[in-house]
Amino acid sequence: MVLDASKVEDKTIIMINNQGIKKVLVTAPNWIGDAVLALPAIARVRELFPASRITISGLPHICELFRESPYVNDMRIYSGSLLSTVSDIKKCGFDLAILLPNSFRTALMVNLARIPLRCGYNRDGRGIMLNMAIKVDARTKKLPQTEYYMNIVNYIFGDGVFSGEQKRKEWLHLSQGELQHANEILHNFNIPSGSLIIGINPGAAYGSAKRWHPERFALLCRTLVNTHNAKVIVFGSQQEMNIAAEIVNLSQVPVISMAGKTSIRELMSLIKQCSIFVTNDSGPMHIAAALNIPIVAIFGSTDPEKTGPMGNNHIVIKKDVDCSPCFKRKCPTDLKCMDLITVDDVLKGVERIIEKQ
Image (cartoon, rainbow, N blue to C red):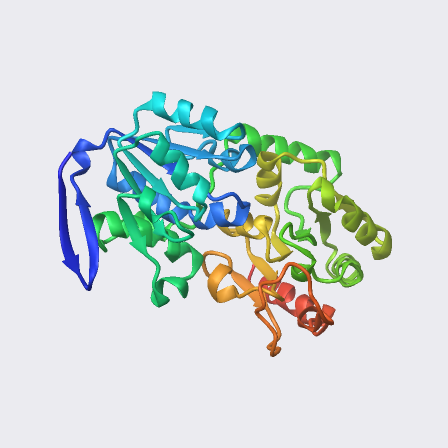
């Protein structure tokens, strides 16, 4: 293993001879959306370590995103105690740990596991546990989330040219069996091939401040079915089943609810069948973007410049109000950032995409 440290713009860039790195551990973010936004950085890790064994570690539902991925060799699910996790990591003999999340626990984990090289952001009191600690300055804080993660990889190797992988249109990967299973589900709902399938994602795990109103989603569904003969599928987690049921009941047209009925992989494969995906800022929004599905994304309390969907195949609906983005889970006042977004605003976005298809 060869290291060469040099000063570049007052920031130490650690250049690693990748021939000496045989095993790489990449710790994944805990949120689905963040994990998807980290995919370009993970793809670059694979590009820079083509002969190394790359392992993703994370929560069970996060690791599911990386099944079928060409970027990683292994997945390690960590949901037990810190000591059991550290013991498991030690046995693997990793040469390098790349920490994508900002958590103190993650830094403590790789430090206790005595991984020789530990790279991540120097924040939240964890710099002492990292021997490749990246300063978080004003520029870093303003980076879009995808670039925030890529900056970690750039720190190790310096800014370089990312090959054609950077221009990918799809970042998530599905097997033929998974796609066939999704087709069978659609067939069971009498949705013929070639239908205009509109996916609706009315939830957002982060909090209610990111959710557009269910009654407006319902009116949107009714209009799309009546004017465009669309087949509408509402997605969501088990915790969002009530929201989905409310939309189905209020829409007064045939709408399918898959809320609480899919695994992560099934959700991915069904989103892949959608013609358009209408969604709040959420994990499923980022999944749709990573699968190159056209998106109409509704933003309220968050900033599309920082956590917007990857790529250019989307339309963002957001109103300029003085308190947005506030990044709060629940609105302390009147949620006017969402109140001002009308059904017609979202419908026009959907119809713009339909015209292009």
